[in-house]
Amino acid sequence: MPTNINTLLLKIICLCLLCTQVQAAEVTIHKSDASGLLTWTSKDDGFSIQLIQLNPDFIRAVYGKRDFPAEERERIAGYCVFGSIIQNTSQQQLSYRVADWRYIDKNGKAYPVKTKAQWLEEWRKAGITFAWTLLPESGDFGIGDWQQGFTTIQIDRNEKFDFIYTWTLDGEKHQGTIKNMSCAPAAL
Image 1: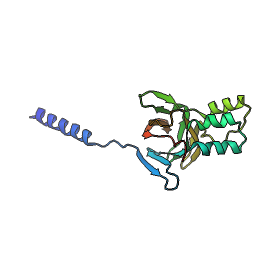
Image 2: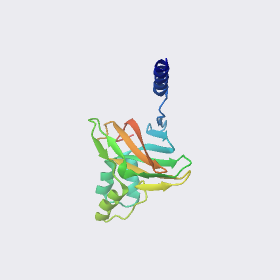
Image 3: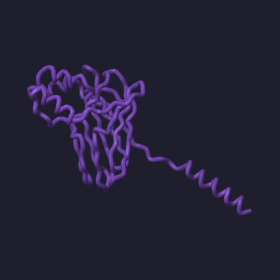
């Protein structure tokens, strides 16, 4: 009889484990009535990230206002650029590193997100010292801290991709994914 009880208990435990829901990121997509541009917001395990499509003309205007050479304005406008807002929504210490973030193309190939340090090195070689628009490549956040800046992805403007981001809460690494993202259209 104890064997039957143990078997029944094991089956109940397995059933409970199968029924337990895994907490997944809450991803919402908002479409601007004025521009038609999309914003993806993901809230997951104490970390919130918002990615707002920015169209190439806006990027040209931002860097044109800062007297970037035309070729550098065109180069960054050729990227898929997002206004990014990240926030620690936990009650713990949080950190992130853009160098750990990836995007996955339609063929399943992963590519790194270009970091602020990479842009600054290229701009330095072009004689540009401006830096404040880009998302810092890493950050350590206390409770409620947040950061914003541009995130750049080098992909064909018409191609969908998945965005994979990571963060660490009190030493424990987490990963989230936003599926089927897209660049802003070339023109509004």
